[in-house]
Image 1 (cartoon, one colour):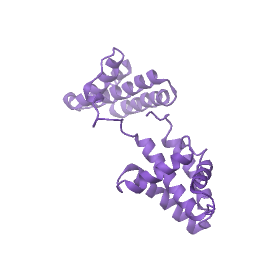
Image 2 (tube, helix red, strand yellow):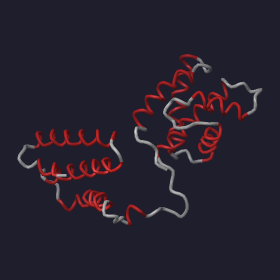
Image 3 (cartoon, helix red, strand yellow):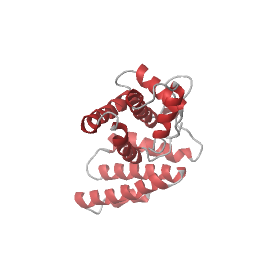
Image 4 (tube, one colour):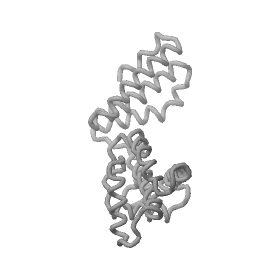
Length: 210
């Protein structure tokens, strides 16, 4: 973390460029390293950013929340867990991750369109759900089967419109609507799946932690 002390000899532009290089190096570690290296990279990014801001006029008192997060990451290695970061909002299972909610929104939107326009309605619903799960299997949306597709559809149908899963479903619905207009409703899913795969690769690069 000694990188954070490098900014003082430079002007604001040069020090900003230095900060960018430090963030870039640690981002690569964060995206590809094991968990401990990822935590170190996060701490390095936070501490370097705080140091840059402090040495360019920001009151150190106003950076205490950032420094608190760095200290928490460091103290974790001494088995000291900060209650601010450990407290749960409510009793029971941990909240679903944003990644999982967004994945389910994508799954639900694609499944609903495919079931409405492509599925063989003479087959049982479980078979139809399994078929659309296979269609999305390599799109970066996690392990898919009929049960996962059913749960995703139920989540989006039951939650508020501002829930992350519903918001993402709305985005995919707009893609499907545009693809339907340009290529036809029966082709829309196959048209947007490569877009979904690219989105997932960019947004879901970290393995999901439940």
